[in-house]
Length: 447
Ligand code: LLP
Image (tube, rainbow, N blue to C red; front, side, top):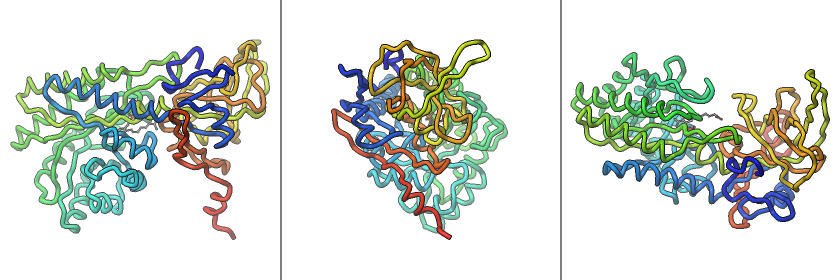
C-alpha cells in the first residue's frame, strides 16, 4: 500500500487501526487463522482481470466483426477453484501437463475449452488429452506429430492440433522467459521451414485435424511492437501456407506475456492498447494478403493472476549491517523466502514490501527482506524503505505474487509450501492447504 498503491490487489485498503485489509479481510486475522507465509488472492480482482481481457480484446476485434477466445494460462497459478472461476467468466484454460489438465477438469472446465501445451508431452499426457477430448493440442516438435498421430490412430480419434511456431521475435523480461527466438527448446522454427513442414504433415494426416498456428513470444513483455511483429509474422505464415496448400488454417493463437507492475517504478502493459495493436495488425495483414479472419486467441497468465495476489509473512529476526559506503542496511528475516517465491533468485525479479499488521510513524530505513533458507541469495526484496521499528512478530506483505509464486514453490530445507486463501467481501475460501511436516514425513520412505 502507501506510496505504491497501484501494485496491490484492487480491494486493498488500510484500516483505521492501521492494519492492511484485502477483500474485506484483515491481513492479521488471515495470518492468525491460516498461518504464515500465506498467499492471499483477491477473488474479485482476479476474476475482473480475466473479464477485462475478454472485454478489451472482444471490443478491439469486434471493430472488424471478429471474435477472440481468451485462454487463461494455468501455469501462472492453478487450483480447481480458479478453473471454475475461469469457466464462469467465459475463458478457456491452457494447461502444460497432466496435473494441470486434471485440476482444470476438476474445476469443471469443459474439455473443449482446454488447450494442452508442452515441449515434451509424455505418452500418458497425450493419451489422456485425447481420451478426455481437449479442444486443442499444441504440437511443439516434428517428432511429436508422429507420437500424436499414433496415439490418435490407436484410440480411433482425430486429434485437434495447433502448430507452435517460433517466429524469431525476441521479447520478454529475462532470457529465461523469452520463448520465440530460435536458440531455445520451444516450438517449430518459422525461419528454417520446420513450421511449414509441420503444417503440411498435420494437414495430410487422417488422424490429425489441423486447426491452426500458435506462438508465445515470451513473458513480462512491455513492447507493443513485439506483439505486432509476432502477429504479422504469424499471419504471413498463414497466408503462405494457404497459398501453398490451398488450406487457410482457421485459428491463430498469439499466446500470453502481458507485463504487470511489481513495484511502483514499473508499468503494466495496458490491455486495451495491446488489444487494439493486435487486432489492427491482424486487420492490416489480412488486407494485404486478402485472407479471411481467423479465430484469434490469446493466453494471458501473469496479468490475470499476478496483481490479484500477495504473500503475507511474519517477521522473525532483524539486524543492521554497516555498508562500505558508510551507510547502513537493515536485514529483516521473514518466515518464508526462496521456497515460496523463486522469482527473485531465478530472474532477479524485483518486489516491494509493506508493514501489513499495523502502521508506524517510525523513520523509514533502508531495508532488505530476506528468507529463512540456508542460502545468502535468499533475498525477496533487495531494497525497500520500511519503518525502523519493524520487529519480531510484525506482518509484512509483498504484492504481485499471485502469478508464478505458489506454482513454483518448493520444499527447500523441508519447508512446508504455504496455503493459498481467496478473499472476497469479508469471506475466506481456502484454495490450497499448507503442506505439513506430516506431509513431508508421508512423502519420505522411512528406512
Ligand atoms: N502461453 C504459453 C504457451 C506460455 O508458455 C506462457 C508462459 C503463457 C501463455 C503465459 O504467459 P504470461 O501471460 O503469464 O506471461 N516463470 C516465469 C514465467 C514463465 C512463463 C512461461 N510461459 C516467471 O515467473 O516470470
